[in-house]
Length: 339
Ligand SMILES: O=C(O)CCC(=O)C(=O)O
Ligand SMILES: [Fe+2]
Image 1 (tube, protein in one colour):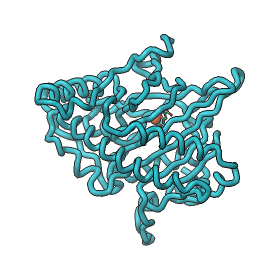
Image 2: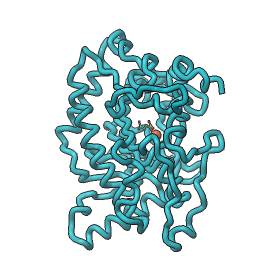
Image 3: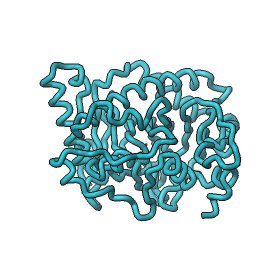
Image 4: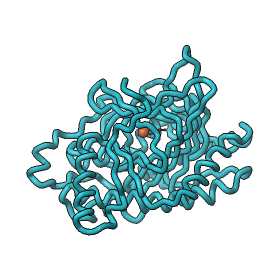
């Protein structure tokens, strides 16, 4: 393990996208390299106001500080749409509990009226659960979701350019209804003799993830098999990583890199806010025709054999949610919980 506080991942300066043509090209090349070689990078000058970053972190902290009773009123186990609060230890990655407490929201939409033959993933759409005890949470996270979607989509278009595809190549995949997902996460400190799995090693399932972390280390990235480096906190930045949908869409040319979080030491805690940009639930991920110079480097998506990828976005997303949240699975999706 190398120094925990050194910044070792590439840094992408998003302001260059607004610069002259030379700067734009530079940024697009850097982005292509970062995504291909590491699959993780810091995004700086992303355009989201520091006041909003601070407000969202503050309200997330205030949420976790609510009495347990208030948090339980919005527990995820009540929601067929996988929205709401989970106690630390409730989520499972690689068959082990994750020691993190979390609050999930998604795109705020009405649940679909379901016919008997509707695919189960249609139940993923629906309203969020908001705590009455903290009305600012809804206001701030709704704004956060809008602004983050904007940044993520601009980034995705820059990715398309880096792949020498038309700028709007991915537009019809996320379509008018991108499947956004926000997770507020608190990692409690753990004693040395306890499991330190904050979240177990995994790939993210969507297109892109943008993560706002506080000043506590813990996030680690597997840059080569068995070689982990720290994604140390870099103030004002987002840590961005590629999800499985982009890996799938590029036949593995882009990497969805495995990562994990190691719990803080006892008496500490770590707070992070993840924004996952997914595709429209009814989309099917095609294989995009990359130019020869890129496609010859693509080796196929290196899917986790324990967790094969599906091109049908809704099914792929549902599969991930069922695996992570067995309580919701058993209550609302019993026919799939058995499998
Ligand atoms: O909290 C973090 O730093 C990372 C969280 C993460 O990887 C995830 O929730 O998918
Ligand atoms: Fe992740």
